[in-house]
Length: 332
Image (cartoon, rainbow, N blue to C red; front, side, top):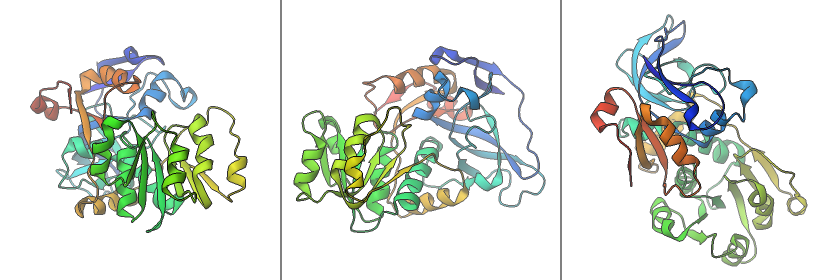
């Protein structure tokens, strides 16, 4: 099978398209013919060596799968050949999704929502699971509460907006002005251009000085530090970013705030919750660009660039799907 193999830690050129052995499912596992995967910030962090101690080289990376079950191992009861499935491979535990085939334990695999294409489904598994764990499990966001979502037009942010709205929250988000219409179409109630206005001032103005109940942080650094300034009493901050610098959280102490740092865990339950939102029309991933398996280095370079012009996710077409889509990059 074809696979993008990470040969060394570094830039996008560190990948090499190779022929590698097709995996064989063991007891409790399914072999999936990958139709699509996608690119996340975690992917380029792994590639450049941020988690070098956890990633043996050479290796196959990647953290999203949408595909079709080709074979099942002994003891598998939930799936059969021909089933369309989606999942996030176990992070830092075996080969990833940048390949034509992938093997996974059946307990992390879900039935792909019929209303989603493989490209859409692959763009949602990691970020969707992160959004659900952050809001439902960690922050325990409730109907009638308010939330500030930093970076609402991004790969995870655009999903978090929709999940928060489905939970009944009032949604504030920060984006550039050219993304206002996009995030409003997702359900954002108050949109702030962070390049033209201090988001702390905007939030306090819009809430009458009370602040928001939850902050979802995708940026870290000073943004994480200042998020305490917009919290209401007993507010919660959920961050999916590594803390790269010391944080002064004295403002959070005065508000009895709680902080949660989320590195998502893989299980079928979160996928089933997301499927429910999709079936009710409350969640739709946005694919901002499509590349082929061979062009994963180009996709990495684009996502990692500061002004990449993207909304939502970069999806990767694999195998026959790549052939049908023409295997060329396209963007909204």
